Length: 430
Ligand SMILES: Nc1ncnc2c1ncn2[C@@H]1O[C@H](COP(=O)(O)OP(=O)(O)OP(=O)(O)O)[C@@H](O)[C@H]1O
Ligand SMILES: [Mg+2]
Image 1 (cartoon, protein in one colour):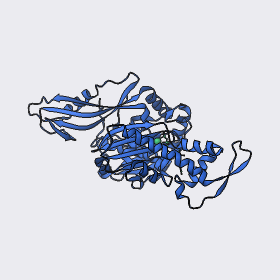
Image 2 (cartoon, rainbow, N blue to C red):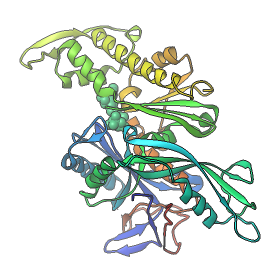
Image 3 (cartoon, rainbow, N blue to C red):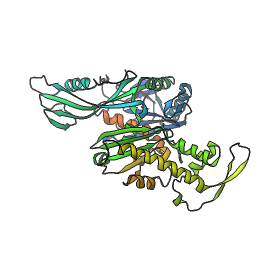
């Protein structure tokens, strides 16, 4: 069974490298690319990005690994870029899994506190968590994560950390995340083929939510729409909890495809136009002009107007956003969205006008997620960086560092709270 397993220890020197343990590696295997981000946990859970690498990937279709060798090649190249930037060697990483391969089931469990003094211990928490994973999941799935929503002690709810508190009855409300076994196996196989171990699997939407959303937004109610190349993830948070989650098999590739078919031009030319003009709303065109592109057969040139491409993009973006709205409207998560909509993902973030389209569809305030405070810039890195934040938030007080070696004399972690600690294995959740 795959669960979050890690190793912490004092830094030690091996050959020309020093091992450190407050660094987490996040890897996003997406439809269009593999991104690797190396992040170091600083004070107050701040994350310093030490290295990042992105490589085009042809081994994934609509978020599904269809070619392990090609995916492994992209992983190797993206890790290499991140390693070079950080001057470190990556031995393990946390990796994403896309929403379509995941089911999230809510469950509650309860245990009696047996200690005479009624003080709740870590062991009691482990007992209640052990029982909460008893949910019916189909045979083709395995549990990959447990998200605790709240603990309840003797009827008092919204408790985040019950250890040390007094009570006779401890309950937990949790979401049990189960992934398709074959998808998990293909992810692990692709990563391990490069000699890198998998520390754990993180649901893409949960990781991106960590990077894209402010805590206040999650409190007030917010819709996060992540339009990737082949998949659009829709999540709704209320009072900090994920209350709705779904995904659609559409993304930026479909926008490019539409341009290619609509203008009868090669896919690569369509992708070029989309990336160069970055417009999704015809009314924003200031200077419509004719551009020369290749004909479908690649032998002849022809002229198309920018407005023709933008109209096609506008129609598809409108459709994607409307599909997202319909999904939410048909669910219990409808209403109570005080913080509006946040858009992210390479498939939508770059184009001017998407904000206006989403505002019109949702009739809510909309913003495009920014990752400047993260130091990652491009939205493509959001999931990989979000994985780092997700892992560091999930395991407060514990070190879930990835297996990393740092070249001797390289910049070592600035102020590592974990350095100098005695080695111990991370306790498994299960
Ligand atoms: N400058 C740009 N302008 C417009 N679109 C862009 C630009 N750069 C990238 N894109 C689009 O972003 C998409 C890739 O986004 P992203 O990296 O979020 O997807 P992914 O994670 O690979 O896919 P998925 O999450 O669906 O598995 C592609 O469709 C690409 O065409
Ligand atoms: Mg993605």
